[in-house]
Amino acid sequence: MKIRQLLLFSTMSTLTLSAVNAQQAPLNPETEKKIDLLMSKMTLEEKVGQMNQYNGFWDVTGPAPVGGDAQNKYNNIKKGLVGSMLNVRGVKEVRSVQKIAVEQTRLGIPLIIGFDVIHGYKTIAPIPLAEAASWDLTAIEKSAEVAAAEAAASGINWTFAPMMDISRDARWGRSMEGAGEDPYLGARIAAVRVRGFQGDNTFSSPLRIAATAKHYAAYGFIESGLEYNAAQIDTNTLYNQVLPPFKAAVDQGIRSVMNSFNTINGVPATADRYLLRDVLKEKWGFNGFVVSDWASIRE
Image (cartoon, rainbow, N blue to C red; front, side):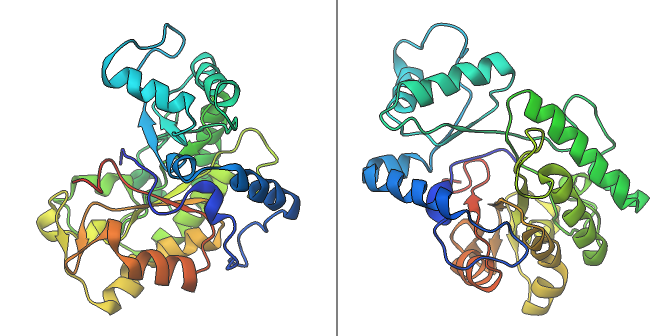
C-alpha cells in the first residue's frame, strides 16, 4: 500500500514503447520528440534517478536539512536523482519541492507527487468494499472523481488506487480496500474507478490524477490471509479470477500498476518477468509504468 521505488520502468522510458493498447490514450508525437530530446541529454545516473521515489522527510516550506540521511536525500533531489515523492501534500508544500526540482536541477524535470487516495481525500466516502456492495457504478465513479478533484487541488497528481485484488479469505485484513470476491464485478468497478480518477485519459482537466492498479498480482490469494505471504495458484485461477480487474484497468487506460508483496508460485511479484513483461507489457500492451509497493524489493 505504501511504497515505493519506481520499479523497472521510468515514466519517460515507458512512453517510448511501441505496443500501445487500443483503449489507452495515444502518444503525442510532439511530446515524444521532447522526451527523446530530453533523454538524449540525460546521464545514466539521471535516468536511474528518475526511478527513485522518496517519502516526505522534511518540512519543505522550512529550512533545508543539515547533516545525515535527510541532507543526502535533499541533495539528491537537487541533483535530479529523484523522480517522484509521496506524502508531500498541500499547495505550499508541493510548490516548494517542485521549485527545487524545476529550478535547481540540471534538467528541470518536475516531480510526480503521489498519495494514497483510497476512498476520498477531504470528502470521505464509504470504504471500497462497502461501495462495491452497492453495485452502483455511477456513484462509485463519482466518488473517485470527487477524490481526484480534491487531491489535485492539493497538489497531488498520482494516487496509489484503486486496489482491485480479488479475495475470498476474510482473514485478509485488506479485503476492505477491494471490491470483493467476484472477478466480474471487480473488473467493472476497476474500470469506473480508473475513469473517475483519470477522466478521459487526456488529462485536459487539472482536476484529474493518474491512477494505479494494485496489487499485481494475486495478493488477495496469499496463504491464510497473512500479509507478505506466498500465493500458490494455477493458470486457470490466475487468468479467470485474479487478472480480470487488472485487464479491465489497462483497457480503461490506467497510467500505472503497482506490484504486490507476495510470491506467486515461488517467484516474487517484484521480479515476475512473466506477469510484468510477457502479460502486462507485451500481451496487454500496457504503456504506463510499474511501481513497487513499500520497500517490497528489499523485503
